[in-house]
Length: 165
Image 1 (spheres, rainbow, N blue to C red):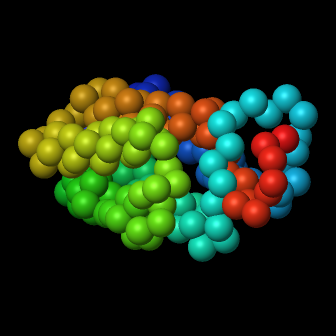
Image 2 (cartoon, rainbow, N blue to C red; image 1 turned 120 degrees about the vertical axis):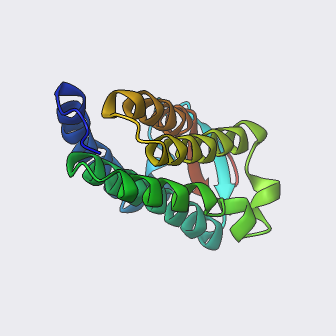
């Protein structure tokens, strides 16, 4: 089935590099330095290096899934949209990958993660049913809204820090 092209795909196509750059900066920033930036009033979540790596790895997988979905939308390939979204929906979250994160991650974080997984699943179902880009883009927006809300709310800091800056 051919998707209707138009401004929504262009908007997402322009937005994706911004998201990718942000994820790259998060992954490559020394978090102990970032944690002490004055005015960063996001809630600090204290994590070990292993926990941090697990969380960032999960986020990078989600970003890659978003990229695959958007690429498939641009290529008018609904089967690939469904496959990428379904795979992301079924992927375990950080707490399922590392037991200690079940105690570390706050409830609102976990709720945001569940929203992300549910929206990936909804995107997969819509694509399987032959949805148009106009049907899929609002779901993608809900999905990324949960990501943005979480990134605006929380920051990861080394667990060995004695006090919150």
